[in-house]
Amino acid sequence: MGEQIFSIDEEEFAPRPKQDANKFLTKCIGKYNVNWSAYFRRGVLGTVMFKNIVGHDQVVLRLKKAVAKPSHAYVLAGEAGLGKLALAQAFAKALQCDRLDACGQCLSCRVFESGNHPDVLYVKTSKAKGIGVDDVRTQIVLPMSEKPFRYRYKIFIINSPLTPQAQNALLKTIEEPASFGIFLILTEHDKLLLPTVLSRCVTFKLNPLTDEEVAQITGLGTESAAVLFAHGNPQRAIALTESENFEELYRFAQSVASDIQGMALDTVSVFALYSRFEKYKESIQTLLDMLYLCFRGQLPKPSGALTKSNLPAGQTVPLAIDVFRILDDITAAKKALQQNGNFQMTIEMMLLKICQQ
Ligand SMILES: [Zn+2]
Image (cartoon, rainbow, N blue to C red; front, top):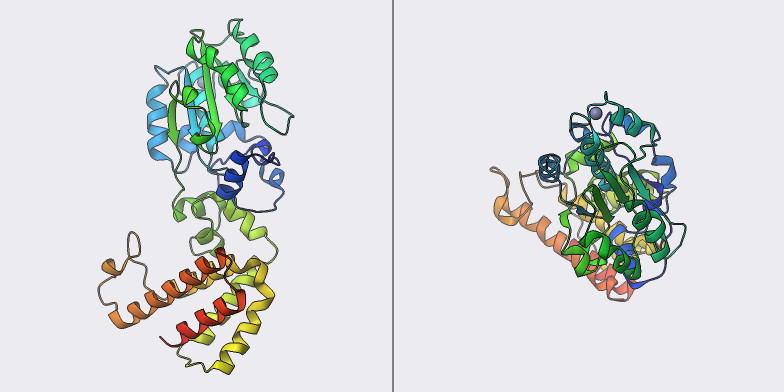
């Protein structure tokens, strides 16, 4: 890890209750069985400030502007691991700072860095279904009836899912907030919040980071397979480096890709090649992603998105077209398997097509 902060709250990754919303979340986050607490670096509050945040440039710009004249409620929406908490903390620290800049020198900043700022409150719950009505009453409504302890605002950072009932309970407070009240609601998707709540908040949607930004945050190289498969999520990149069979899968994909090169496979060889896939049936989607990457890697990296129309000068078209066909075949196989296509038939068909390019 470099000097950049990437502050992570363990709670963000706590086991989720079985609700529709959370099925949706699981889809967003992916299934990475990782001990996230290992990544929760204590003591990072000292480095929490906008200038240390990698990526999310537009969000940082707008939050910085908002420090002088903030609204009462903000929503930061984005999948777990993108850095919502770091943004919320940098914002809160700047809002309370004597110099409105997270200076690190004033009393507010120093107290904030100790992790015990009396006017930056983290709304928490131990309930599996998320923050409930009683949590809202005791941790938000009641404290809001009193002025800030000694600083400019009373800031509530809400970093766990809110049940719909809790959102309704929160609504009145957000509608008629005390002049000093500021809410920072962190959610994995804005669809998890009621429209009535959303309509009263300024919403920022966090996009996935670039591979370069992920590499910078994680300290992994931009060519690292984990970075390429993280789809812009630093947390996922780290998870991948630690996942048990990631390296094995990647090596297998590379060997398949190089075996296939220029090989006109007959049916017997395709059967033999298929049999090596069987072992990875459980991880087939990841494996096909990797295979895709191995073939895509044969194309020189153009700037911007990879499309047939923006191949770099000097790229021989036939090779590019072949590779694109192979990429299409892999994508088709992925889709077929997602739709419960027969494993053996799909993989064999894909191999045959690839080999006949
Ligand atoms: Zn300060």
